[in-house]
Image 1 (cartoon, rainbow, N blue to C red):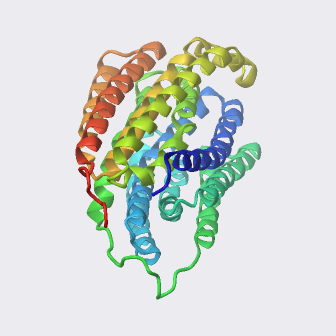
Image 2 (image 1 turned 180 degrees about the horizontal axis):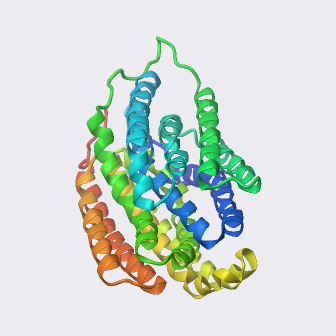
Image 3 (image 1 turned 135 degrees about the horizontal axis):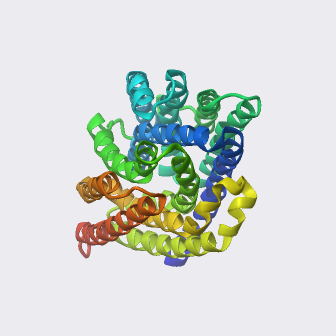
Length: 407
């Protein structure tokens, strides 16, 4: 059995590697917002941000699939079986994307081409997620780091080129989809082929397992994105664009600590280690969140310098956007533990929080300040409740003394 010091060093090394890859991807993503904000203007940038949010919602199957594949890889399922599951989910995601293109175009008041450019990424993200899940479940964090970094750069670089050449939001997002597809092929090569002698279990998780994980991820993604979509509907285009830029700080605080959940997830999927892994993850996420909120407050004066004076009204609110993201990161860690331990009923709390947020934003919030105030309050309350429940249920599910011991 590994010594605690060795386990901690291994986890720290994994987090460092995944953080480097994730930070590379996130920095690339945030750099995309800077030229998009300047070249498209507040109104055009509001459309671009709303399409990105819609893309993220339809990427829920990819996020869910990665967690299921990683969990089943920990439990011994074969690469071939899990990869076939990815192909099936990608086909369903592609069909859903085609059906939803006109719906999204109507709901967000964008062109059909713009909605297509956003949603065509969905099945490609699913294929990529299957390979990332295989790397995550087998603890190949160095390779996973490379894939994460490559995915971020390959998605953003083509989009920036299209924007530079005068393309609109839809064309830029479509170019990013092409980069995602290329990365999925690269990730499959990195994972490697399987042969008939694959020693893994031939048991295949059902579509129901992915659906259960999907509803958990959907609740989380909705909480991270719905405020942007509602801002475009409720606020005027100028205010919606300002809110969209402030929400970049939310995304930073939400995605930057993702390595914590990625690396500790395999331990969360192991009943013997789940309770300790959940406590460790939540502790680290709270500490990182506090640091990111402080950093946002200190860096707020740079907003006008980076994106122009038009976005100066967001400066004083930046720390609140970061606080929202930090709370959502804690919520993500708690919900990941729910998927790992197949305790997905905990997502009901997140769905309740989402309902409260929608009601308040539609009936009460009418300004940027009120929108972010509601978002922060709901995120904080939901994260606190789910975190407490996650720790308690993980501890209750742990094997008793002597379980798992052999003579």
